[in-house]
Image (tube, rainbow, N blue to C red; front, side, top):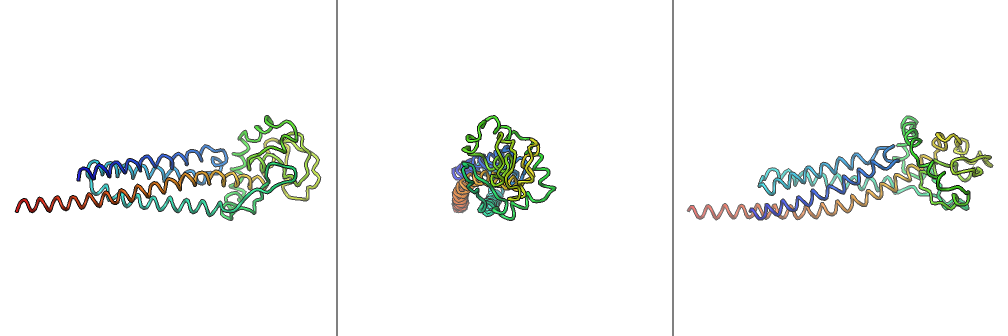
Length: 271
């Protein structure tokens, strides 16, 4: 029984370690400028990671100190957390399955359209109340100013591989036909009727295209890219947790079987 308990404790220690990439993925999302402005996915990931850590520690303690009720709590709670993590991964996949960039003539960067994304994501940015807060947060970042330092010439800028949020928020849509002065200053549009975003563009460095649908689409494209990376981490961790959980179940069952045989032998000895 002692050997089995030690095995259960060691297995649960692995589960403790597996909570680290979950928490790390949430913290990474929290420090990304776009995610820090939207604050949708990072907190569920961090909370689930902390819960996995707490439950795994309970199983670790229950294994080494032979506390059956704590082990039973671990088995039930960890199963629930694995299911919740799996549901979160499926949810992230479903809301990010749509939405991709479009090629623009003579440009290396992509353009983004809001209608390409899932309805759930669009609702996160369409409300003026929500977007005002997000826009204020984005305008206080250095993502657009960095482009002015990196690209001096028009052709260098047109050949740049911009992030979706830089493409959507820091410049006017290509179809408007604005003339390049620098990455965040454009003049003389050719076709202001091509898109409402053509009228929403402003050379005011605090305005730019933050009021544009292209900015909302660029933000969602950035979120999609980062969420997909976090999703891969969560998926790998879930597979590892399931493996650890199944081994833990087998070890717990073996420990209970050993305990039953031990008590049975003790009973025979007293007879």
